[in-house]
Image (cartoon, rainbow, N blue to C red; front, side):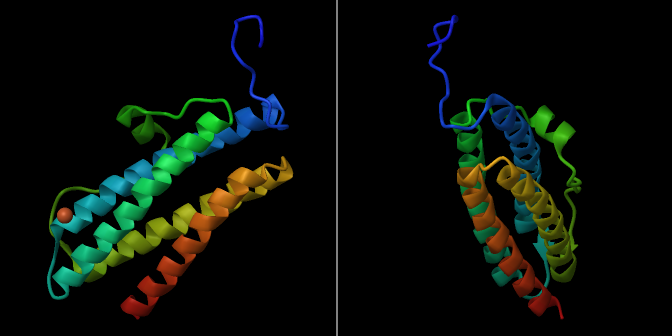
Length: 162
Ligand SMILES: [Fe+2]
């Protein structure tokens, strides 16, 4: 216990590592939250042939992202820090761009999602490199799981769009 009477985090990762990684995870969490909202937007606003399939697929994506958001927030707590919780913080920290509520055709919708998967994959690769440098294999394991998932989703979207 430290002077403040708080039990210290001792998972054999120093504070600098835990703080740096948590900050990066909060940026990633912000992107996931914006992505989650965008997937809902497209789920609701997509129109055209194949509506049923795309509408359903987008729901599958946001369900996955929802679980992943929880996993990332809980990892930040595991590292001894707090996850961002305000929508205003997410909007400020996200690099993914928000989109309007309007009609999107199927191809347009899938292209938007594919582009965001790409951006998330790029961000994930950078964070994975960082966490591995610090020897934080627990975080790496979580991030590598979603990296594989987003890579596979990207392949399937490319196959659909080609
Ligand atoms: Fe729905």
